[in-house]
Length: 558
Image (cartoon, rainbow, N blue to C red; front, side, top):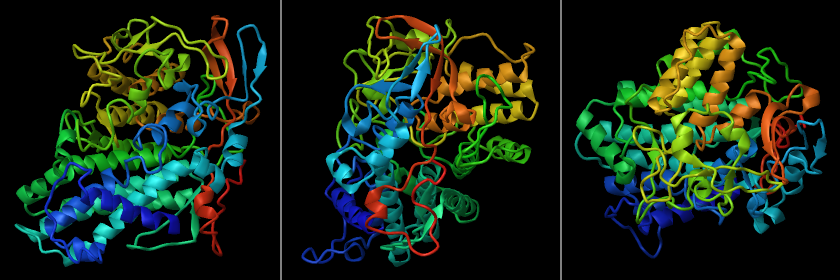
């Protein structure tokens, strides 16, 4: 992990220079020979470093990519690969990485694109292509390991700091902060890459690659460590709240974002533990078949025991009214901009000029009378393009209103970015688990609750006698529209089987598609054939070759 160590130093330097909103005075050591240990030696300095470990190391644009935060490009890939958005620009392969191998139109004409997601990813997974800006595998790995490494540094310093007030509570709050974000980082790696590295010491490195399941287990370990300390290590609520208030930027303490109580944070952790399980196993729903089978996958199907575990975790997960971790743009000292820091902002505006363009496959999931559709999207312009796919829809800047969820805005501070879990995600996990465990009406009630919460204004589906297949179809549609732009869309398409080759039981059916001639098709079959878990980026595996006993750094299933 040599290439990530220097990023921690670089990003922490940016923090101490004041690029993050926390403006604490530091007790500076020798300015001619700066070290983290010598210069971060007060509580305020450690808090500032802890803020930067996450919002700078983790979320700022680390290497001049599209947009200006982790939530513009790495999140963007999730929405591209799930066919929620398309793109024409060539930056970091965004115009071609999401193109399927072929699609079949309503008249049974098969259109071969001559593009392959797997071939593109592997042809561009070189250090030279990273330097040229065309290696998609690089970016998420870069920031998540930078954040993990910075959290390791913070943890190594805690015991040498003198804290005010209830010192144990204040120190433990920072430990919980680091454990939570280390869990988040490992979850991001384990959910996207076939293998990864476990590094839990400041300045540490490893060349022992482990399979994604072990990375996810490490994520769960740190989430559980955070939960345990929240239960046993906080004796002063006022000191806990004081430290957490400093750790979360003030402009993110708005709306659903805020200073979490210990109970809220534990519920957030349970939601993330449920997510780790749900999104990393198969739950095929191909061509509306709940019993579909996928072969040649890098993961295994959910079992009844798995669904019950999700039910238990999500049952103790985020509740309506809980604070969660969100992000907002700020006029100054923010970690992303209003116009270019999120997938939502890069999609908002007229579809003929926006960076990302809404897919017809996304919009088809709304009921025609859904207020979220009418309040947030218009058809004033049409974008026609066979390669990145045409669309009739644009996001209205600042849409929503009157209790209806807003999908995008370029106004500073207006759009609420969900960084981790949310009430909607937790409720929809409860919905899916219940439906899969034959508690269909209970599951549908959660779908209704989410639609009510977001102001959809549609007729309830619980109590209407829907079958399991019909209920799962409602669930799929709602996850697609309720959780968009939150870094989850690709995980869903993968676990439902849509991203796999048709010959392996995958594919996506019954799709709306706009051709370059402006013809609307409504029953298109799409064969994506995507790599399900990405290879380790060459910037890591070339500079840090796998040691003895390592897992494969190239997904062996494709």
